Length: 430
Image 1: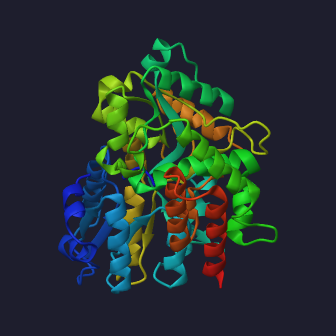
Image 2: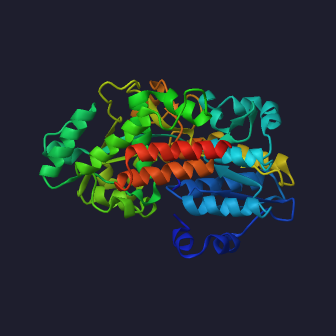
Image 3: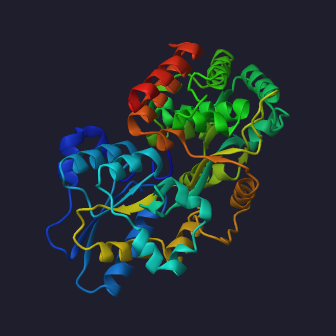
């Protein structure tokens, strides 16, 4: 789900996962002076920013060479899984933290970075305290926050809203009125490219939070007493989604459109859709992809739900967006950590700010008015829920995405989706 979700797009789309992984280059090089680094940063200026950091590292560490590979989101996940399974992982790699990283940690494939952090306290103290939770297991740290503080908001076309005298909705009934008004004028309320599944999942996550508060998911994910993915909040969230679908809230073909190919943004650019629920990295993408449309862009927080237990200031997203780790097979972990430090040094963070990102460090100064508002949104949030598909173990995260997509397709009832998710969670713990 996330920024960096495309320089290898054609290649990733046309080759099988195994062959693609092999052809791109698989595993850690034999020479201890060569550091193989993989990431999923393909959007905006980030590939060039990372390459600039590589040049700084190589200049400061004579004799070392970094071999980087930037791979699109889903292809990257497959490539990383294959490489670890074959015992040929890269030395430095990024993940989204959470359950996916924990799986590699549990299998002993990720180096404990705690000693390096203790030896470099000034470096580590720069990061936001909340950014470490996604990479901490048993009080040990296995990753360094890298990219972006990103949260899901509803982007909208100001010109369309002005044309039809609409105001950004703060409550669910107000949102449904906006949906009705836009449909009456032949404009699709929401652009959604849900072939990727995580895109639609954002609606589900927010609705669960707005209905039941953050503890509902936390208890279910932890398997705590009284926690269940069949909790009424999950069922009700599914009903709200299907109410949106039945109200004609989404442009046709949404479950088949590909976000990575710009399916939802094209609907916005053409004026065929007025809104999109997406991570705040979308603003940076749109600014570079379509500067003229960026002038029409604004956002509002996900609406509150009447009678819901959740705080309307809660947000769904990540404080870090991408986290850099070192594999246990890396021959020179000290040099690998120096590379990570270069990827996240002050120069790198300034480059990210220039790329309309909010890096996960303290006292970040941004000039873009929209990004300033995002900062305020984050500062006021009592809860920041990490994306479900990143927080949960990979298999359970995939099941969640499948069921969320099925809810949008009206091919499953909210009750059945909740029951099947809980059954999958029980199976994962047995």
